[in-house]
Length: 174
Image (cartoon, rainbow, N blue to C red; front, side, top):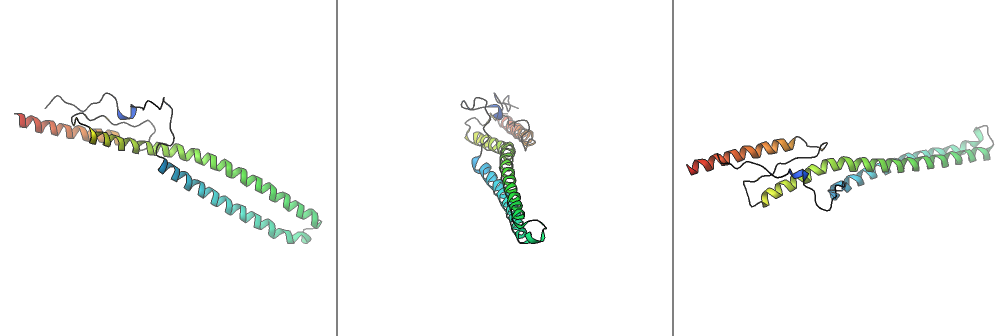
C-alpha cells in the first residue's frame, strides 16, 4: 500500500472566501431560496385575502339587518363600519408580521438545506478539476445542517476507493 492517504489541509466546509469576513450569507442559492420565499408569501397572501374577503362579505351582509337589531339604524351601521375597520387593521398587521416571521424562518431553514447542497456541488467540482487524484479533501458540513449524515459516508467511500487504488498500484509495482 502506498503512503498516500486521503487528507487535506482543511475540511472543505471550513474554507471561507476572503470576502465573507465570517458573516453569514443567507442567500447562498438565490434561485432556490427566493422561489421558496415567493411560494411562502403567495400562500400567506392568498389565505389572508380569503379571510379578509369572507369577513368583509359577512359584515356587509349584516348591514340590512340593522332594523332587526333593536339599535338605531345609523348607530348599527357605524358599529359595523367600526368593526370592519378594526378587522382590516388586524388582518393587515397579522399579514405583515406573518410575512416577516415566515420569511426569516424560510431563509434560515433553506440556508441549512441549500448550504450542504452547495458544498457537495463544490466538493465534487473540486475533485473533478483537481490535478492530483491522490489528494481528496475531507468533506464536512456545519453543525445543524441538513443531510449531516452524508459527509462521513462520502469520506468513508473515498477512503475505500483510495485503498483499492493503492492496492492496485502496489500490485502493479511488485
